[in-house]
Image (cartoon, rainbow, N blue to C red; front, side, top):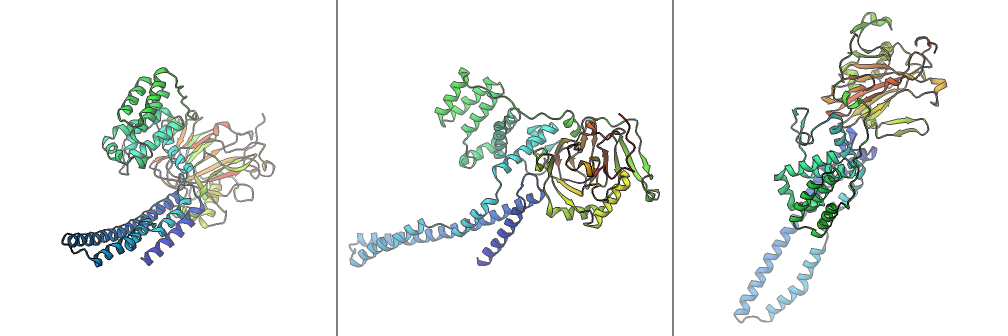
Length: 515
């Protein structure tokens, strides 16, 4: 037992160190591993607690057997007229001495050491913010990709059945309640319906209302209010009548029923953040392919390309957007991912007045790689120079290479990469004139890079990269360069991006046309 306690103690220290690094459970691939380890630890902790309870139960059962035996003997002797002073003393001594020991035994904390361990882990458990973000991930995926809640809850995504665990009744209720609280009443209704559809699970969980924190009548009340907010008054009244028949908290249900019948309840408005026009359409792969453009080999930007030209697939002329194929090696990809993994943190956006800040529109994790950090970084930086024809190695000409990871639901809402003249370092660095985005893996579903204003969608393909210009020929920000990273639907997305600035490109950037 001591060795087992030592193992758990070391395991708990490792978990604390890992969780303290970056507690961002909803969108961090590293923290998802930590969360799994944390769950394993808690299961081990609970197993030990159960074993100690079992040992105590065995001791109690043994004590009960002995006491019953003594009582039986005393009763037999009493009936036989042999209830003498010795027997009387034994009875009195037992009630005076033994029974208080049992009372003390029953009052003591069982497995107190393990309870302390569990309390120590509590600060590292997901918070309400973590849980709300996890719920929001599901709503984002369903909303952006137009998925059916019924299919999604069973692991059926875009016609493909996945064997991963489907949502159970409590999962569906948590998502339904989140949708109601966030006023996503239409999608919340679908989650409530998913609860009602799973009758077998419903009857199983009905006996454990304390686990959910709600009994079934309260679930129906919430469902009825959600329907009422959608303008479905008759259906809401029908659901409340069903709740009333369950006989739980009738007074509260009757009051809500009367309010609805009289129209005293004011429906809340359906609220949902509007999507950028065409963003969801592009994420679903519904854009038409570009026309009038043809693939070619590029060997002009550097003499080495005459021996190994680049494979270029143009996607748009002005602003320039193109896919470059087979531009990063497998060994380089693995080195970049391996070096970045320990340093991945929640990605931030640059606010010109507040500096770098987290933003709900950018939910990836990322880590910058110094320009000479590894062979892979050096090679990729040089390749960006060959692909774009721009200077990227001289100080200030580009940002360090940024390795990015997107877990399911993580996205980067449509945005522009240029800053404008108000950028603090505009004089010495210029603005971001171009971006190179490498794809470091294939994504099973989702994760496209879309340009909603241009009707262009780039599917991540391992080893390829998309290059696009953020400035027009007059060195003004190109508004149509708005782009976004669609949420990953299935799998994970790894990418690396390089932002290129204009001040060092005076011999590479074409002459500015007069207005």
